Every structure is written in C-alpha cells, then in structure tokens.
Amino acid sequence: MSLLLLHQPHLSADLLELDIQRDIWKAHNKYYSADVPTQIHSILGVDEVRWDDVAALVILFDKSFELEELEELQEVLDKVQEHSDSIEVKLAVGFNSASNADDDLDAHFIAHDVEYIDANSDEQGGLDRVVDSLSTVMWEGMKPRKEEDTEEGTEQAKLNTANPSNPLNSFDDDFDDLLNADDPGDLSSLLAQLNTMSMKVRSIDNIQERHDMAAKFADDLASFIPSSDQDDQIH
Image (cartoon, rainbow, N blue to C red; front, side, top):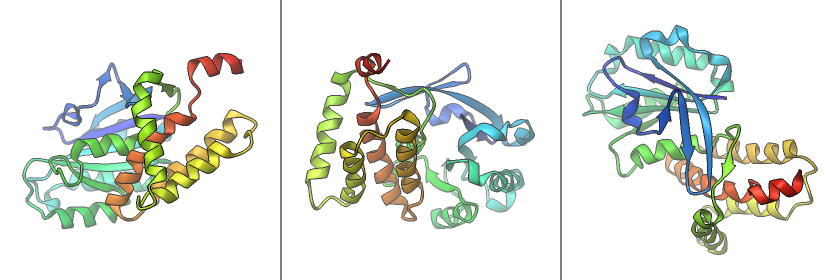
C-alpha cells in the first residue's frame, strides 16, 4: 500500500507539510504511527506511477488557474477514474487564490470521485483535513503510540460515546459493538471489521460530516491496535 502525491510542476509536495523522508511518509497522530511508502510525481509524469498499490491519492493544484487551462490535471483525473475502485482516499488540494468559485471546484472534482479541499480554509479544516482523511486508511505496519500519549484521546472518545447529542454516536456504536463482540478469532477478521468502518467513513456524501467522522475514526482506531505488551502476550 502506498500514498501517491501528484503536483503541478511549479508546486511542491512539501506544501502538504507531511513528514516525508526518503519516500516514506511518517504517518502519526496521537494514537498510532506507520511508515507509508510514498510516490511523488509531477502531473506531467503520471505514466511513471505504479497504480497497482496506491491506497490514497493527493493531487496538489494551483487554484489561480482556470479549470479549462488544466488539461494535464484532467488527464490525471481520467487516469484516477480508471483505478477508482482500488484507491481508498482521493483528494485534490488547492493552493493560492482561486480563479474559480469553491463550489465549482467542489462539483468538478466530485464528478470524478475526488474530494476537493481548500488548503487555506479554516472552515474546511485545511491541511488537517488531509491528514484526517489519510488516517482512515488501514496502513500496513501501524503501531500504537505510547499509552500516556493516547490517554487523553481515549477519554474524549468515551465522552463522545456518552453524549447523546453527539452526531457521531451511531459511529461510536459500531466501535462499541466491535469492542464488546466475541473474539474475532484472528487478526484478518479484526482488520476486516475495521476496514468496513473505514469504508463507512468514505461513503458519506456530506463532506463536513465525512471530515468529522474521519477525525473520530483516527482517534478511536488505536483502541483496537494491540499494544506492544499485548502483542508479546499473543505471541
């Protein structure tokens, strides 16, 4: 599984502020970390992409261009649609001042099954939203963070579940069901259940609700990743 970053030639993937070292994204939040193989290409070099193992895609583009001027971007979107079923997260992140209304950009990318994010929008969540979305992927080799680092987030997750007015309660119920279920028998079964929840996040049409649930998914996921002590007991 790899992360694919595609950018216009005059933009840098560094704009995403991801911790990428030697083609490895050091994915981490309060609860887990993972070393994610990363492909970085200009949109002019899309033919060099290894599409067969891409689990998440982020396209960086300049909003100051008119959409009609971005022929290369359209070619990328057409290519993405060819592999849409196998790519779990597909994002287009816009930088600089817009020549197009955000609603027009949103509609354009949604038509290609890609979520549009304004990098400078506090309302949308900006770059934090990118990380939240990428955190819904069940990356290989995920490792739990230290217990003291996760305690605060775990307590917040409990509060969210206990609060009946919280719109994410139905999603919390899914996690409660998994926590209280009988032993799934093996790791593959557990991962399958978690992947189902991840798919539920990505299937939400309302973008703000999807963002909120993606953040919640990332916060709660670590509860189901065995700690190093538990892993030693298993083995």
